Length: 344
Image (cartoon, rainbow, N blue to C red; front, side):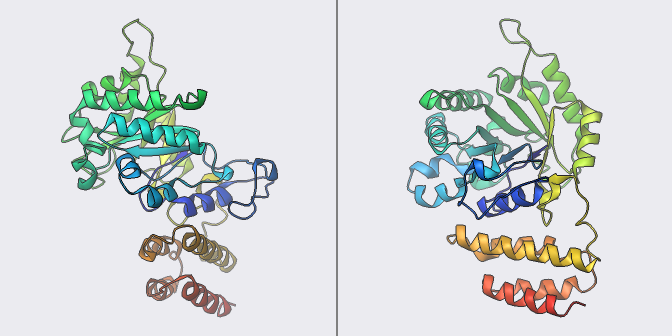
């Protein structure tokens, strides 16, 4: 059960909050960046975290100082995978070598993003239309992943096709390179996220993987993960039973629920006053960390989280409207404090 890479969502601030509140059992996670692995016990939470995608080209063509901040992480988030996009094997190799230096546990290649600016660079979903280049990029990543004597696992996140379902040809092309994992977002690029995810396609991807052998006759060892419209961990387990996939990637379900991966439902009842207080305190903590770690990003990015944190109880809309007008964490804290003081 893994955390999806979501642009301007699963940034270092939110990942840390997820790590803190999705863990269960004894822990002393401490202040951001002020601890080492020996200071706490990791129990529960996402089995693996992905970073939001980072442009491999941008890292080495003038944007390093800004983009490297998106690759910041702490030990609390391990194991953690760095996701990159590019249309250049050379740039991918350099980005992966950087990830090795930064201490990541794995590498993922974005071959599914439908953003036009990403596709113009030859990355994201554009690679579905160019399987040969996709293979070269994966192999370049695998070469870069050997830096310093390491051999980090390389994975791919993609879709079932560009304008139509192309799993029969697209998936075998990826399997030929023997990546550690292929995450299948069960929609085409054309469908974006506008239609329900087709989980029968994930089941078919598993069948294709099970029937695939390389040139030497060796069966594929690549894991197939499914992605799309998964509500929570129980829903994810049902998807595994339905499809036989090796794992599930949860994305939009994490909004407003950084505790999603701890199996606990104790914070789901937001009509309860004490639950509401806990949720709002987590939200303020998240906001403070966002402002501390990501001063280069617009505060409006943080506001999209307020829509998810502040809902599910009477009066949430009025509080949410006030928060959407806030300019910084000081204003957010003041608004939340005033609201909490008014609760019985």
